[in-house]
Length: 353
Image (tube, rainbow, N blue to C red):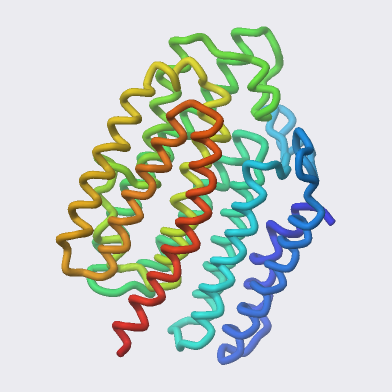
């Protein structure tokens, strides 16, 4: 069994349900499919060899040969727990959704399946171009989930989400292209975007600095940390509960994971150079979000601001630039996701009462 089956199974199930299943049964089929996907993820976890250095369950195929882009997937100690966590939280969201009525259920569950496949692809991607494509793809379903099934000022929330994330994605795309092109030029090799190959082709210090800022802008918007959080309040208040649960629990972690998988290994000099800046951003985010969580009167925003504070602590661990800090950040990603997603469901249950 390859990782491609795990990645694209949610999309295949949601698409088949949207095309062939009666609307009243789509939720049940989608929930059953999410359980099957979780079982597949657990099978990979059970076969994962602890203490084994390097990638496991590798798939590596040339995707766009002329540009050196590969469809390369793999699991290691950095992403295996996050892959299982993704399936757990998306499964919980699908099951919660199945007990409620939704307008246009075919479209609703299709977008959820697309989002889960894109997040799994981002976690498993071992090619920089593939990661960027999956990172951008996973945001598209949430534009529709917010705009079509959201509440309150959903149009304003969707507009802010689109503007902020598109700007961040543009910087990341520019940084990714520059990484592959500059690395090949500086070392006289053919262009490649495979992460293992790029780690062997270090960039100059000047190139690392501005590319680090490009990736940092995209990831900080997505997390989000201060001062890149302008979309947070409207977005979290307007998203439907299943969407905001997985968005806060999983999608924000993809950005933190990107720092560990891409930024620190590929731009080590820039990580040291901007370490103090990142620590200050994390500290300000912790203090700001904590103060707002204590003073806001909206239950959703209490959970949202507390999530920003936790992501600040995760960023502190990442930019301690120590192995123990990275391990602590990864552990906190899992712990926090298992707490914050149920909190949003609890808020919804209290609101229903």
